[in-house]
Length: 248
Image (cartoon, rainbow, N blue to C red):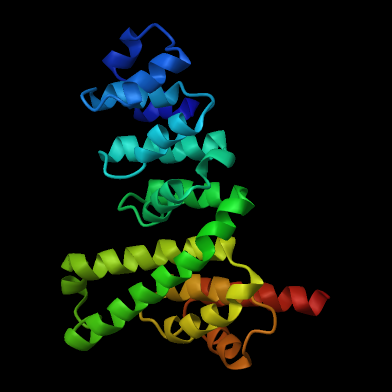
């Protein structure tokens, strides 16, 4: 967090705030909708612990539907504090699921790191996350059917906000499930991978193959497909899997 203070949020205002807010003052700021964004950012930077469920709800509520800097600092602070007990309720879990596909990749990355540190939260979001991935892939399939130039025109692709949003959401959802997947999800994930392993965008294929490499006794046809992929980063995940199996 020190780097954030120095590099991202340093300003004349920060230098002028020569006091350290108390725990009570921090949450008075966070629950006050009239407070300026900078005041909330400053309060979150000074947060070192969470003492109650009520305060946890106030904090996690800022993870969505807030300006970009606030969402980002909340996600990073959530990873740093690494609390679990206060974030197991439905309210917090829904916030976390929404943050996984935030438009800001720094938010997505911090939330994925947080999930990776917390097995209980990973277990709670796993099933819903797979449902979300299935829904996104179905939307993409439909989009491909209705837009024949879905991948043909690269210039149009870069400007196609609807398509890019779907791909971005899919990428980070796959990243999250690769972190929290358990054996009970293997069959559902293999079904999804059968579609994604032929995906045009290599970053999606890479995420799919990263998941495939974590599934024991993966279908040989999918492994072969991954090994023959034209992209180094895609087939490298399978190379690592094969190397480990040979060593065994």
